[in-house]
Image 1 (cartoon, helix red, strand yellow):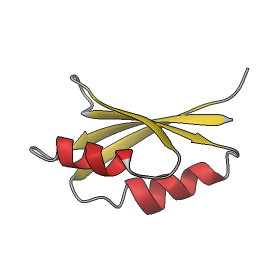
Image 2 (tube, helix red, strand yellow; image 1 turned 90 degrees about the vertical axis):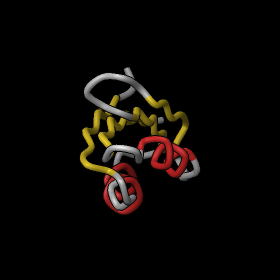
Image 3 (cartoon, one colour; image 1 turned 120 degrees about the vertical axis):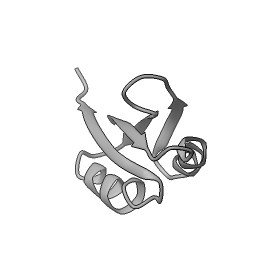
Image 4 (cartoon, helix red, strand yellow; image 1 turned 45 degrees about the vertical axis):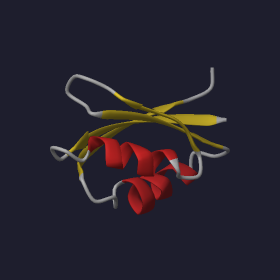
Length: 77
């Protein structure tokens, strides 16, 4: 299992709406609204590393209200 953590910055007032939309996506295991430099942390789980870019580019980053994302891919140890 490959995990990726997506750190999301939203436009003001969009955090909760974006978090709800991300939570409904396939491969999203957890979503948390957080305080600090990021507004949302989402955990993605996939079978292969090749699935991650499509989820980020075609699903998460296309949501209205997202200002920026940072992705951290965790490899199994």
